[in-house]
Image (cartoon, rainbow, N blue to C red):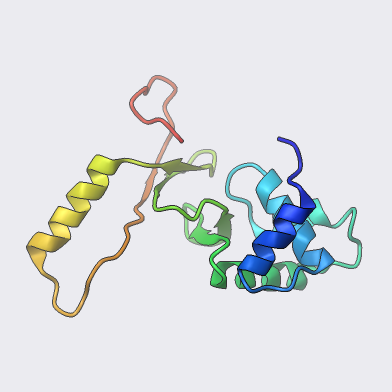
Length: 150
């Protein structure tokens, strides 16, 4: 995947109300280029060679500000011990492979409708669901064809 245009990254940061510092641009660029749902440490290792003054703490602060501004979603890994980051902020679910630690984005409108109907039928007091994000753990099987990542 080619590196994103830095002007577009600056515009994304500005639209989110964040200053477009060189470090934030580099961190956002790494997030867009890195595969899957990277950890802060993976982002740090990606950014550090070209930006030797960037610290791991700076990466964590930038990621937290990106999450607060709606540029990223924070996702726990399969065992819940490490934070990972998702640049896809649309409503979708995650499948966690316990063998490979891979997180696969999964979208299913029928499942979303079932969840909406379930909550509507239960009528939870003082709670109105606005979005759904299931975290499903399991193992990838090479022969399984019905689960398609998007």
